[in-house]
Image 1 (tube, rainbow, N blue to C red):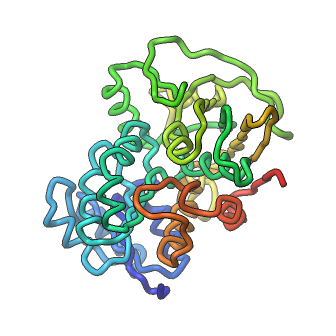
Image 2: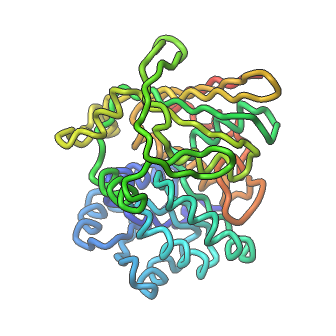
Length: 343
């Protein structure tokens, strides 16, 4: 892989997409920016000067094929992924190049594993869904906590977010997921996704200091319920969200994130605390950082570099924990993420 490798970023003008483009440029890639809004893409190119613009809409396969021509991989940052993931991954498979996305939508990620596993395996092409803060980071932490084991009784993933100012894309994806579920809630129990109408419950989670004891919403289900059991024998995956962040997300008047530093990151901080129950004991792994949207950029860019340089453990559709050496990958995220893993 040369450092002038061209990589398509679909949805490049979105909040997360812009962070991804900036990270790829920092690593020496040549971003090819794409999406449905040609004017916004041109404005992005004018600001950075060294990106290639190739507009395409997801319902035009020929346009997607033209956008992908000559690129080494595609990173899909355009939600709702229920709409974009299928067409973009199909274009990637036609081109014979790796596909990565940053989807947090549970059903869209589940569909990626069920609908494209055979085609990706036969093509020998890596397809990496949920390579982001939700889904990817939790999967890496659970995998690292297990220390080489491939099964556990239960995996808990608790999100201690100081706040959550959702982007327009987050709100749109949430609305699509809500509609697909008919307003029902979802959990992963007894080895399967299960939909239910029970009210959310509150409980306390003991995060590592300095966060400490916090109230969380239990079964605030995120994409980890798809990524973790895709490669680990864990019959129950439970995810939790800090009450403050959940209230922010639910608030119709909560503003979008605002830049608070030169990199464009907000002042939001996070702790992702994983506790895995296995063989009668518990193992823990914790990650700390800033801005859940911004941190997705080094996550997906690190995955991209490893895919393009062959530092992978399998091919076809695979989550981060299945595809990479989890502990080594997490270590490579410094200084963006600080990680504690049991030895």
